[in-house]
Amino acid sequence: MQELKETSLTVAIVGLGNRGLDTYGKHLAEKEHVKISAVADPKRDRQALAAKLLNLWDDQIFCDAEALLQNTRLADLLIIATPDRQHVDQAVKALDLGYHLLMEKPISPDPAEVERLLKKAKETKRHVFICHVLRYTPFYNELKRLIDAGEIGEIKAIDANESVGYFHYAHSFVRGNWRNSSETSPMILQKCCHDFDIFCWLSGKKPVQVSSFGSQTYFIREHQPEGATDYCLAGCEAKNSCVFDAEKIYLTNQRTGLLAGNTRWPVDVVVSEPNETRLREALSDGPYGRCVFRSDNDVVDQQVVNMEFTDQMTVSFMMSAFTDQVSRHIHVMGTKGDIIGDFAAQKLVLRRFGKTPQEIDVTALASDLSGHGGGDAAMLEEIIDYLLQKEMTSARLTTLERSVDSHRIAFAAEKSRQSDGLVVTI
Image 1 (tube, rainbow, N blue to C red):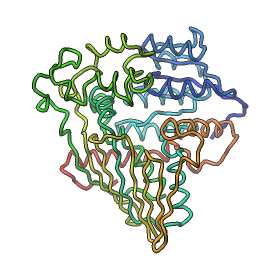
Image 2: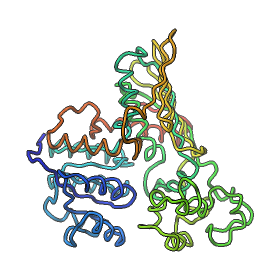
Image 3: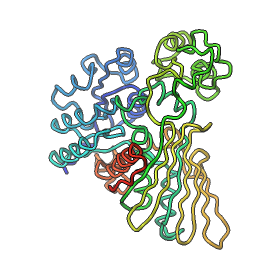
Image 4: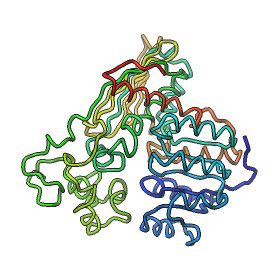
């Protein structure tokens, strides 16, 4: 594998929405040994914001990924943060030009495309990393440390759930970019490949077979309240009792609303540099102002997946939209004890059989837990250090080769779900 010899790294970013600019661009712009040399996005407001925040010239800004990739290589590392179904075509072109890659998950909703990218990465001998940020968080690293130290013996089972949160689900999977699987990815792949990657990493085992059930149960037209309008700001008579009302979520909600002081996610997805006037205009007739029961969404709002791994280890996993908090919970069971974890609370409880339980406060183990529990910054730092040969250990690096098992589980789960729970061998 060809390595870099320089002491600094140049980076290009395609796709400035969601995480492209706010997570990758802003963070990397603060690094002395990193220079952002080019960006691409079809939206002019994002281009203008990138120019201002990243101090870029006009000739460093492109209208889309394809325009950027028509040039000779403009950076050492290309970050691909475009819509799901664009990833692989852009990645293949970039690899042929000589870029190393950091790709947003999922790699692709098409299994054949995943294998195509694996083949191309091997041919070009370039590094490809996937944004499975949970591996880099202090929470899951402490859990991994306890498991590897033999504190609970051999892992026999894992029980886990992802609480998507009612407002997060409404924002991203009913109104937002990932609402329709034919345009993006199935819910179990787009949202939960993070979790499947964690199961593989924590256990060190390979998935064998999968079964799954799930459906779109609630966010459908039959459940639209009486008096509701197609857009929340269009005189909806049901808004006072509706927790999914767009005005509540984007303007007044204490966690997510602009009027409560929040100018970042999710309001900055609706409009760049949000203010009340611009936000109300966007909600009046845009996708984020639609009634959640009158959208064009088709992804599941709940799904359960049962997995068997090598050595007969089993995993049960539940994804649900119907939660107040956005969090993950995990219970790892072994031959000598078990560990219970709450990601939102950043707490782990180690229970060795016959001994007093030990509670671990993960907040005491890290100085910064922002951005996916500290995972965003740690991922970028580790990948940059690895490419610059500052740190050559790679036990947790989310390489393409390591990430594909998470996708294979998701593909099998979706096939099983669409086949009345058929057991699918991986």
